[in-house]
Image (cartoon, rainbow over all chains, first blue to last red; front, top):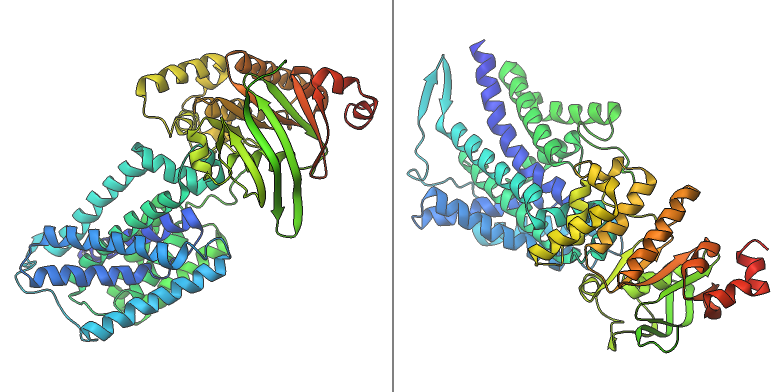
Length: 292
Length: 240
């Protein structure tokens, strides 16, 4: 029983990180129907920026804020430089461009900072553990859960309570109709990249602390997993991405915790295949959108 | 309609979709306060004309003048700010948002909170059925209600000129009548109307002037009454 609770808790933390990344994937897909394969690498850049801040002696919160802001700007630049002009031409061109950006970010970081695995300095986030009902709770878990919760609440507020959020939802439903309302589609897309990339940076810092690893290819696996999570939940749906992330994290953790750690990644992909076979639009996906 | 100051003036406008020459030198004027109808068969270029005015499709040559200003190259989202609203073909409401949110998006370009509130009230007075369904997801509305929402949403931009693309499409005859009388009311309240319709009979009934389009060209123009009497118009568009 304790083992199960313990694994569920671990899964919840890991799933929260997936969820943060998956939300970015799904937002960007929702608005321009592009799988932004560079999204995973924005995580990595975020982890490095936070590492740089930490090494300069900044605390956790300022490092997080700087990482989020830098990656938000990076996201906007990526969209402007690599996607905007190819987007109208073809989806495949944009997708190829995204893969290019991904490789570019990975190897430019490797070139300048080396491929060594780095870790956050010891005092950056001093670990503590608590024991409640026999379940070990690490303050890393609390950090991950707390940060995710706060960011998701802010995101929900932006999307459902602000003028910008309304514009984002309108553009993702029908860009041309939104234009007819005076919504500038290009800037709305830019704002979406800004927000999605900021979330990815936060995920990068959390991932770096949680697994004690910062390296140039660190975004690959979580990026891929988050993509699975987004598809699992129904690509384009933000609640779906969160649900998909948490479910995936928990499943992985249960598989790993009960002796199958070698099959953890395999299980993730098997789940993806099963969901797509049984419910191709994902758990909360809407099927074919109605446009009368 | 005597001499009226032209609010909108299309001068030799051409539009190409790839290899397809959709508009072949359109010349058209809309005077302040008028209802002007564009009639013609499917594919004649009626919608393309409206889309060119709204900036949704690019013109390959020619000029679009609005209030004496060249808006040919103005981006679509800025054209709305100048006072040109479009009710697009097929309504294109935001089916995933509520009725309220759809109307609020109509006011996206505006900052005058008070004026927005007033206009919201007057739209809801004009369309009481929207008031009943204000919190409902717009996709659940009936076709007629969606058309009302699309018109209401356009009214929320507080337009000087409203472009309507096939507002009668897919609606029951009774609703078509209702929509057309609403269009007349909106015009009486001071909004100029450029109307695209396949339902030529209704379009000519409420219009002051009309243009007939055939394969990207204007083949006839004149007062709506005159056009309705012409034999070839009767034959081609009014069912004999």
